[in-house]
Length: 440
View: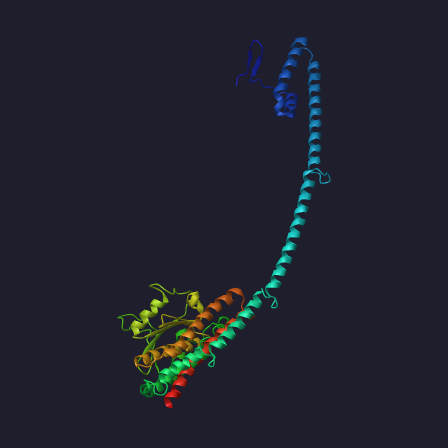
């Protein structure tokens, strides 16, 4: 860039003027950027004054003294500003200064810590009192007291409901109903005498098995070892249990999972169990780690419907190694649509055995109805057993969600098991009473 000096009436503009004198460069380098323009103007004015006084080639002492004076003033102003800044910083952040930011921040933190500690202490005390009140059995508003009262009231109500001496109870109603149908001079006395004996024996065996096996192991099964027996596939275990039960009842078991059935090329249904009278139920063995859907076209209930059609059966059982193969609502043992049952295998097959007996009882009741025998009283007992199973599933889910092994929950579970056994005893007693009246 070419240097240029423009002169107007009241000003001089210097453009592109460059100076490489070390002292000049150092002087302007030490100055603050915002003061350099003013210093440059003053330097030009002083230089012009000096040149006029001494000439262009004259002495430069006057100029040096002026520059020294400017440098001294600048250093003094800089030191003053630095001191003021340091004082301001110390007064702002000195923790010993009551009005400093540090002191106020420390005081705020201390106050907040004290307030938080007080709130936590009060909250903990309130929670401790709440917990103590909730589990105090002597306090009428506590949950323990209410559960105990509910169990006591329910037990008393159940005792009245099945007391044969209490008019209007289930048991007295069953006795009256059986007597009205099968008492001396009853309209069906001759037919009962000819047919009720074999049916009674079959139903008694089925109901007794249900009473002992349906629920007794259901809650404990969640904690058992679920691995299959060494050297056996799950279907082999299922087949072993089915064959053992079939031998006791005179049934036959066919492993049909690899052969096509009545529905063309379909191989639905792993096992077909046939009763002596020709009636059948089908068994599906499922060993899965992910749950099958319960309903829908691909659900397990639709699959069991297809299995019954394919194998010419009237009842279907789906048994799984553990509960993870079915939806959560199924639980360990549950019946659907009066002709399908889903259950776990159990540790040694005890739940499958209960399902086997349940299916036989269902088929035998159908046979009794077709023979003209009234089975309403026995159906009442089976229906009560079904309600007990459903109630047990609900309590089982609640027990898992709240606390495993809680005494209050266990009392409710025991109550439902007693309810199931009492219902089955009711049906069995009805059959026994009916047989006795017919024999007399």
